[in-house]
Length: 334
Image 1: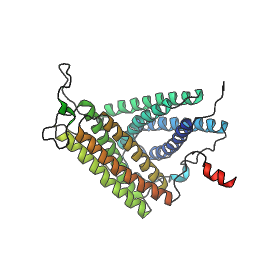
Image 2: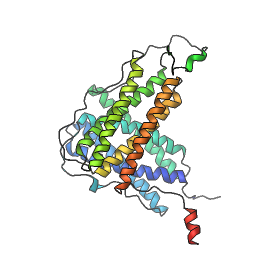
Image 3: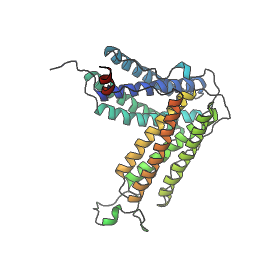
Image 4: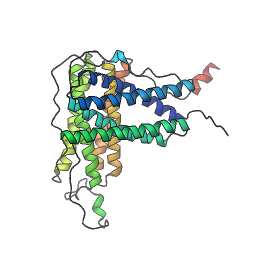
């Protein structure tokens, strides 16, 4: 029996992805810390940075033990010191809330595909840290009166079973059934994520130096608005108000605190998270029109992500993830 097994493909993939995202978070939070004014938000930012730095150290240790190259990731060269403010302090909180929520989901998935004791311990700790960070952020948002909640609906007054075969109908159906609470949840979460992502990419479009990158971000603004508008309409049809934020102010600065490489990497990461969130929406929706709508949005996001990946590759900004051996090439050399 092997007591010190090699890392599996899923463990290598998860650790590599964690290193990339945490190195990005350190860069982003470093800039936030340079300009934040609210002391309570500053303390949470410092805590987030400390967590990411700890994750980077843990992953580096495992990779060094296994003689796996440590990724380059993102570093000080991707951050411009003393760049002026572009986003508000409140937006920093919203960013941390989104990262904490999505981080918990990703760490849970990583834990479920980890088998070696040290890797499981790392993701158990990371999952707990991410959940506590999310709790700390949302508590502060409640105190400041800025927490955006999912819509309120009436409580059920009895247990019911589905009797009507048209319960799942909705596409090309004149009289759709009311939305389920789980459907409202994912529609609302997708709207909120795109509201936050929309602010981020609007700022990036203002800051990007590369014209192709700027144009890519401008297309992303339109796609984000389309997603928000179309999903909000589904809620509106049931007389349900969509979640919204009122603090999306962006300054008029055009001096970027981040490299175009880092901004592209962040948007591509958010695209990936958006695809996952919409997939969850599809898997939990029981009305055909919602599933069809999500499917259409997913196709548009996939097309947008693909064009962004090609642009990033063109500029040599994409680090190749660990991969299987190309057996055909090996055989050709033999």
